[in-house]
Image (cartoon, rainbow, N blue to C red; front, side, top):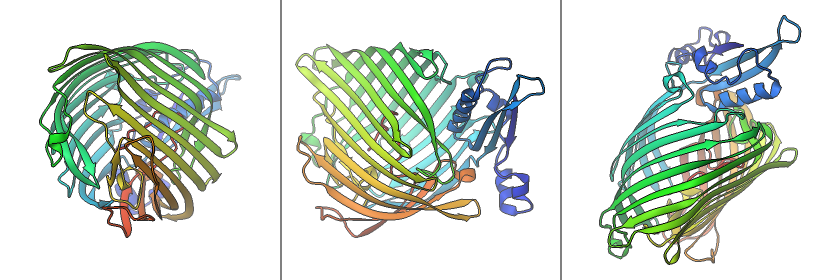
Length: 512
């Protein structure tokens, strides 16, 4: 087993040039032992190309490398092979700041982060952002990738917002490879936050509360590397103290009494993998992305013991679930479907539910050209805790419209985006182009009503050695429909990250 690590710029690339030498000097070369801790096979074990490909994917997923290559190389002894791992670092030190203007909301931000501290794969970050509507958030975080030189990870977060302070701590031991039989995690958090409610982009009510909680989960999987399933358990305890709602419509907002709840459930998880697919032009410029073509099922079935001031304690059955599917029916055509949901029953029947569904199709015309389409639906209802409200605007996928312009408890967002890698490379940066159309529906009933449509285009700037999988997105967009409260006109936005990405069968990420 041989591990070879390389800096951001190889000696022949850096030469005597100032900037590449400066970049290398700002970066700690990844230690070989950091890579070795991710290797799940040992000398003498039987391995084949599928093991090498899996290790390559796992190393890429760490986010600290620009390039990863894992190969089996014939050894001097007949019938034996060496496992050779070659990595090339990316610049993991990030520092910056600036201003943004998205959907009629301007803001300031600053951050500094190192995601490969001392070459150990650990991450330390500080960030701050504020907006002209009075919101601000400062966060300090730390992650230890190999706690005590094991496969355990630890994460700590300290935060301060316009609503109060927060802290979070978690230790977990994830599934590290396709044959790994077990995982577990424990965590605790405390936050002082507020749930905002909006009308035509303005906050009309705010419900402050303090939330503390602890949770634990354990899981076990069995089966072969590409078809695995198993059972586990989870427990979650939460204590929420609510304050009086503020704002013009605060007095009419339903705010529950202080609430304590404990959720205990048995879990089932299954994953059946058909194959893996790599892509270079779908989201990033020159960075290899790994996509699992698979079916996933996760179910947690159990119940809450819920106690609220001025109400009787209830035992409430509950179910949480995730279903996902990703497939490539014909070469170059990738399809993904996922749904996440939760149901909770009380003494009077169904008292709370939430659902998120996503469907995506990506047509990869070539290694430098792709058409991505995505549709997402969110809905929910809550009769005991704070009311659910979704918002829709430029900050949640409907470009050309002000942030949080529309609000309701049913939301549908659909987007189509054509992406090109122009082939233009300026030093270490690659330039891409994109053209897009977004459509959004918002409602407080089953009838979603009319669509609101926006369109535009922009630039994508990526650099695998410097940014890894991240891109800088600069878009011009405009609304095609006149909406009450929308500023209208041509809007310009600068954002780090794509508007949406191909999620495959994975869980649906939160959308504001």
